[in-house]
Length: 321
Image 1 (tube, rainbow, N blue to C red):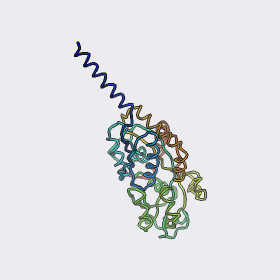
Image 2: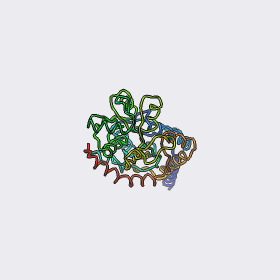
Image 3: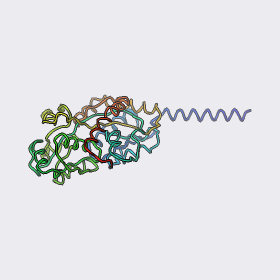
Image 4: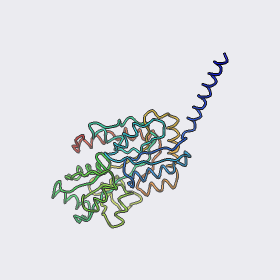
């Protein structure tokens, strides 16, 4: 009898301890995987958010870069991680939408994540060097039409927002450009500056400093409306391509099976972070509009964008890799 009571008491104690450990989340550092190289816009954004979220969670957050293959390397790593809330992914539209239409097989399932929340949306800018002496988007288009397939455009990698922007530009302008993929902006920008490639659709945060330094020229922005932070930079829609409306977006996701209460804790920390005035200012200066931080908005974003991207990939004639 006493043995049975002792066993039950021990089991109850263990259960209580387990409950306390679970309630203590996070009780050790969290790792966020950035699927692009260090120094790029996605990496900078991730580190800004991680720094503020660590304060909200009262726990350290480590940002680790696993770049390449259009975000698939980092995405696959997180998909295989333990669903305990200690490994997250900074996921882009490439990760959760585009790659499903561009690759024959992926090392991860785009639907195999638990959404944490939507982070932000930002346009890209069309950049060029002085190699051809372009002074406007019209000059770029004229050169491309005169020499089909000779001009090259760099991207963050196959299926990324910069790749889609280039393909949309080809469609809308009726031109032929050669795609040259890189792992991220930190590799593509030096190639553009050196004249190894001719064009690049880059994020504002990494592209504009090179323009301001006089190393590159900027001709237009990919969103439907101008950015408040760059009021003098016209949209490509204004320049004769009214259907041009393409942005990059960012979100946090966790491995499928992550406990709901852990996801709720992370989502609350993200929402608090995105409401911080200093964080918002930093994102807006990067050309990124902060969003709600909710899982519901992320789920809706994915649902709304899938048919749009599927159509763009089909119209561009992109073969599955």
